[in-house]
Image (cartoon, rainbow, N blue to C red; front, side, top):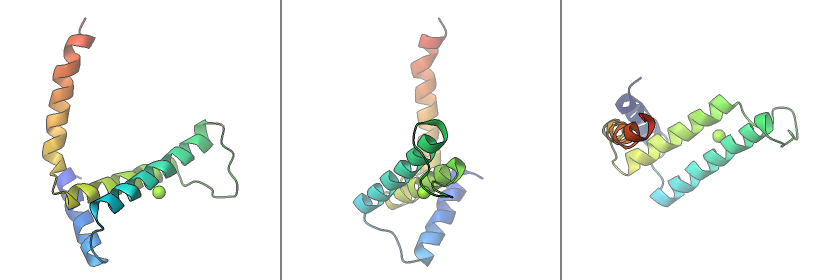
Length: 102
Ligand SMILES: [Mg+2]
């Protein structure tokens, strides 16, 4: 699925269920989701013990939660992530090609 299409699907879903939150609330939600990913990874790879059966969703689910919330935030801020991602990839390529070609 293309990023643009993913943003459209997220937009349709959010508008169907009450609309967007304010940007800082959305940023807080994104931070929550990143924290849930950190928890799941700490249970799987780190020293954190699971407190009950089913504690911590699958890492792949938490990554998806982060992506969904990030797409929603981009929509709210009218950021076209497909365009910005291409710019980022090109910038990274220019930045690192000298470093890693030596
Ligand atoms: Mg989550």
